[in-house]
Picture 1 (tube, rainbow, N blue to C red):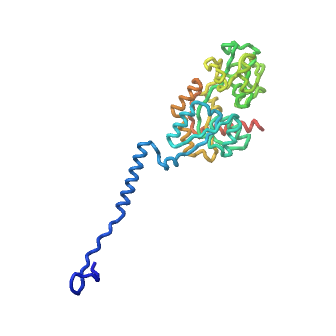
Picture 2: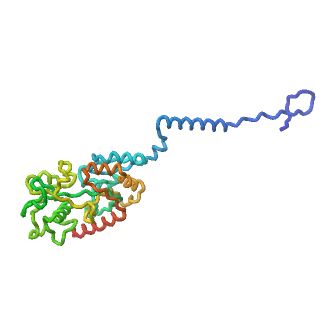
Picture 3: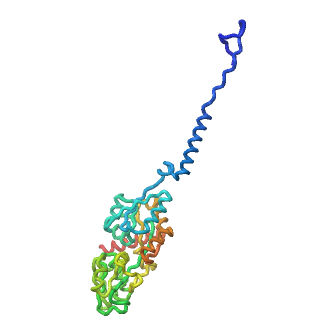
Length: 321
């Protein structure tokens, strides 16, 4: 560019001014600086095994209410979830009547402690709509005795203790019917009570007791139906049970243990992934080991579980009328 300048090299007249020295753009230095910082961060992550803030922010916490927080399988379950950015936080309850209200009120995101029939009873009694989003396993319900080594040895007129809570009571009666010890009018169902026993066609008398007492009374009865958890806690050997129902049969459907959610969350992809992770071999191996081989994994589609729940809910409503 040519301009007039006050400086000159000789006589009058216009001078040609030297072109201005180009200004160096700062962009290359900025880009270089950014690149160096990025490289240093990358080296730091590799050397320390650290994660960026973005990764930490991607972690999702899922609160699961349960009555079995001490079970061994949680270690594998939570670790596998953590590897996928899902932090499982167990919320422990000591009373079976607490986890469902807590879920309904939003204190937890899921719960894992109940079978389908228990949920049907809760929903109908509380006008709620909690729903199963996945199945876990079924455990057998078994008949134990300290006096007899086989069902056939139980004498005519003998006494058998059963849990008296509604869902386990009905299942216990069905177990005794399958074992040939009692007969239920009309064949019985998932809500049967001792009042439905056909005494003239039954071999034994039935005594309902608290579920936690079914082991304690073993010394004073011919036999007792004991929930799997109480049996294992008491050191009873499942292989020595006189009789057990079949966890794989259609009759066991009401007793499929489930992971439940609020109805509006049933399609949540993170919660569905939690269900899938429960069926990882590491988790199922831990469940099997802890139950001494009695738990049978069950993986039923969500739609089927909803259908089972709907059928059982209708049965419960009918019984309550």
